[in-house]
Image: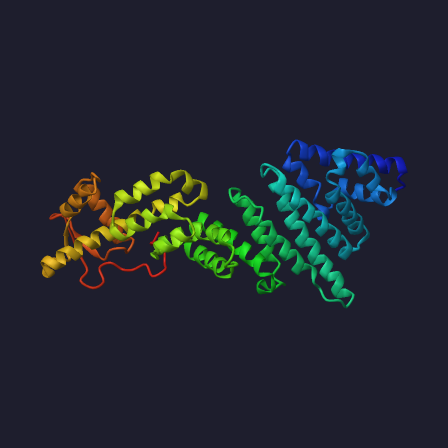
Length: 391
């Protein structure tokens, strides 16, 4: 390092503090993230590390001004982490960085919007990198490598503050967790595992990967504290649409117990084959379903409702004339829909039947000229059995 005067060191520290304060006050996440990237080999951060090693009383500079001191719990350990990283003291660097980012998380929760998500992603990346390097240092000293496990707990904590609307950042944090495969998921505290499975399950709902969403959200529900009714309700709010999409209907008593009655008519519509009731339920609770991000999932249940309606027609015909039960005239379906105040013509119904057959919700074929759907005599209405409708 070239010679640096005390005055120059003081100027560089002040410059960093000003940039940090300005990034927060202007909600500039892109600038803030660059100030937190300890391992990035940034020339400005290297310069700051040199300044900190010359000017040994950075805490006094921070405490001099309110615009700096309010972030003291983030900045002081961040400075220590940067100093130690430059000196090659990786365990000390990791430990200081962990204190800094825990304070950052607390601040992040207090900010009114998620403007700092980019900075949060950088923190998630940095803590994993620093933990891996700290563990290599511990191993070289004959000590037990344990920092990566601590970093894993922190990465899961990040899901407590992530806004799922920013999906690409969620995926980035997931990659940070899954890349660090040295730790065993089952070794983490139950609350961390439940939180992680809840948020990654929600992300799978967004991606319409319903088997994975079912597995993750069911895990969260199974291991959630049974006395935490609010948390159980949060999980069920997403697990119920997932279960509905794979053909599993909840009991009305469950919906009532956890105040999720907005799903009651959706469930009844699926049981009855009542398309009008499903659409009315979606309309009545549109805002709530849109805010939760499950509206499109519920809207796609229409195919299952159509399947149930055709099945009811099949059952009625079977009672009247078993030999012709498997022949469903499209005009009969049109009449059933009109009774439900759903105005569709034969061509529209034929299109719907084609989709049901294509997606294996109905087994059969069309006698196009006679406008009749001929159903299979063996299992004409396959069950989903916990699998989503074929794409």
